[in-house]
Image 1 (cartoon, rainbow, N blue to C red):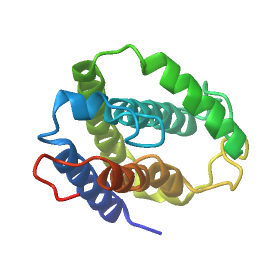
Image 2 (image 1 turned 180 degrees about the vertical axis):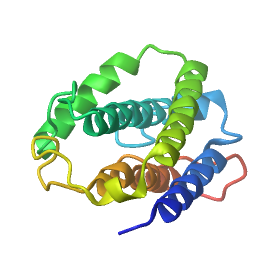
Image 3 (image 1 turned 180 degrees about the horizontal axis):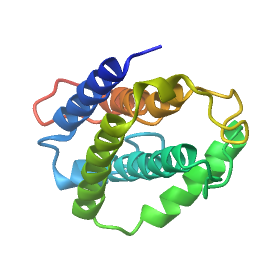
Image 4 (image 1 turned 60 degrees about the vertical axis):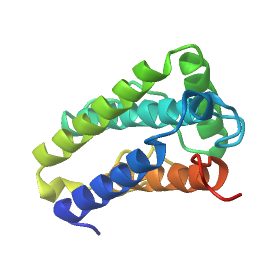
Length: 166
């Protein structure tokens, strides 16, 4: 299991790589579908922001010992349903708003992680939150560094900066 410091470093590293990737993209590149399946770069960042929001709510529910307000996401079908809802919610939101929200939520996640006692990170989250009953560390990583990496790699494959050889 990662320590809190290792997790923070992994989150920051993957976030910086994602930020570097989107830096310098034109508005047309950011809004063009097909960056990640049918999603644009904007849609992808809206998706990341939405899952960061879910994570913050889940961690708050966990540490205050109350039920999470988001519906359980235990199966791939649940993930697909929730992702479709997030896509619909963000579809008409402007790129600058999506980017600002995603950056703000990233900062909030780091602040939350810093405030957590390291001893709680090995605890398993409630069984109705995920099919595989992850630890809090695994839940945090799944919605941050692992998630950033997954979509950054997809964007690296599908979105080209000006001057890239294709």
